[in-house]
Image (cartoon, rainbow, N blue to C red; front, top):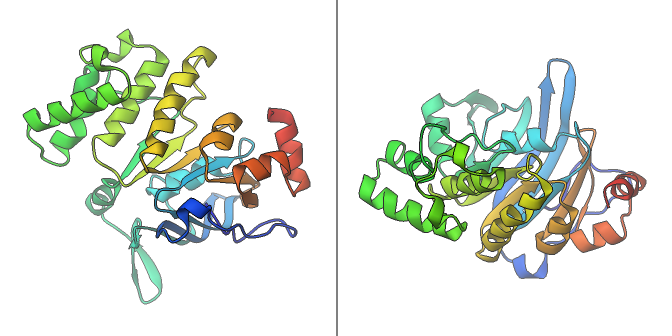
Length: 275
């Protein structure tokens, strides 16, 4: 993510990594505010995510990271501002300068291009790993079962679970369930993948397998926005790192630079506690 709009006074805009220069903006977030009642969760966020970029969001609990992520695919409505994915206004149509929320079916159609992996795996407990991955292509895209099965088996192999295709979620470890969840999201062939703290519910020894799958996705050129506390992943895989606190962007830049030499005192304070 680049060019935060509401930052600390000393924060500077960051250029895209050299490997992404010239790439198109896949996501544009402009002036986004979000209220829950009187609680002002997002306070005028402006960000862009380029095609092929791995953008990592970090920050303390309650900083607005997950809420921002959920606004990108309209799981949360926004109170003000605009969000575009591939030049399509998400969740709304605009008439006369006013936003009108789309019908639920129209929002569902937009989400077909956006995969999301949650902290909790949200798998169907009564379906096998294979059936979980097949479900959306068959039910949402109308894909025939033979085609969906072939693709699902390929994806399970990609996440290292080809031998668990017939297992039910209760027969899988947390890390395996999360990898099935990633395969399920990929089954819709999204152009954008959102990860909301995908390893935070896992035992430490299971985290590595999930991160390795995400690293493989990054290498393949998948555009990703990742909310995480895994600073090592951010340093190794991220193209940009954005630190949020109190509903604003405090600092954004190259992950290696932000982690090693944060410009803002609040960033330094946070990193000193998590590194």
